[in-house]
Image (cartoon, rainbow, N blue to C red):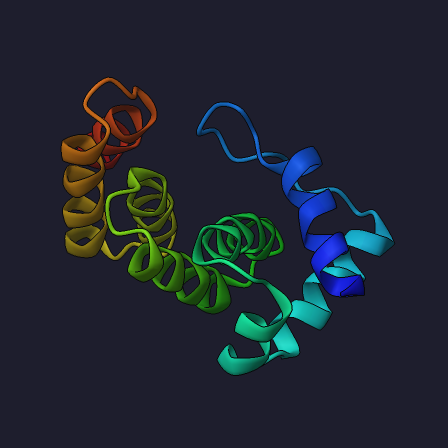
Amino acid sequence: MRFLLLVITLLTTLVPTELKSAPFTEDQNIQKQYEEFRQLDDADRHQTINSDDELAEAYLVYGQRALEAGDVENAINYFRAGSELKPDDGRFSTMLGLTYSRIDERHLAEMSLLEAILLLPTAMEPRQILADHYYQ
């Protein structure tokens, strides 16, 4: 229950209204919560968070934190898991594209960003990331 309140608090305060990744802060509480969440296996995550929507949002937030902390492998895992829960949510595809772009996985980045553009036809961020990707 304590962890559910923690995730709800994080979701209401940290999930940006725009798709832009929020800057990583060195706040020790957030870092500790991220580490605790990362240590849970999938079954424990589902027990801690009651709905798939809440879990998907938690995956998005923690994926962003992992990416900002340089933990690319966990960021990819979080974004993929969130995408499996909410396949029509283009934010996960956008973040996967950004993550793949940062580690120079060009084909995966391109495919993820094109998917994000299809899912979010009016969003600028996936287009900007894809343009930067092509420019390089």
